[in-house]
Image 1 (cartoon, helix red, strand yellow):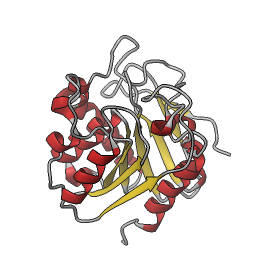
Image 2 (image 1 turned 90 degrees about the horizontal axis):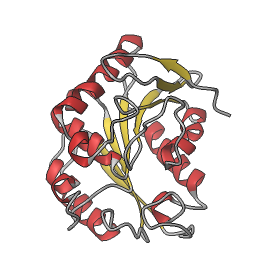
Image 3 (image 1 turned 120 degrees about the vertical axis):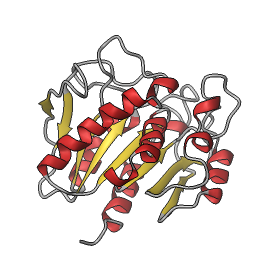
Image 4 (image 1 turned 90 degrees about the vertical axis):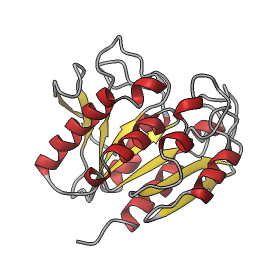
Length: 237
């Protein structure tokens, strides 16, 4: 099982603590970005998929860093996630990690968190190994997300390794499976892969954790597939 989190306070990143879940003999690092309004509490508690499945990554030999909002009052809107202010805070955390070791760093963005991963990968590709877009935001007609979808932020070319993870029955209007497939097909990347899933259930809200969007009933299975992909595709020194 994953150990308890180690709390680190970095003023250049957040007034809230950064929850770090360390793995023995880790081979890589993940910085996780939750969806919705982001992580707004000191405890690191969230119903978001990646928070609940973090132990899978840790048990697979990957250190997990949970990226917080700047404070408890900040809401991680689409616009904020793509801003230079937010990108600068992500860079500060990456620089902190690089002071410890030079293991590959991956940004894992779930749902709206894909905006964080995508925006940073375009600004500072040399600082990370790759991005993982889970139930990501792709081309859509939503007024809030229209200008912050992956086809606008990343476009058709990236210089980092890219993994798309999506459920074929995702019912969330800003994360349609058909648009995810189109984005993947058009993407020019040094290395790319798309993991798709069709099992599970959809008992709750379309964009919530208890639905296909959050891989209900297959949560750990999906997380293990992502962790395996990371381990199998680590760069050779």
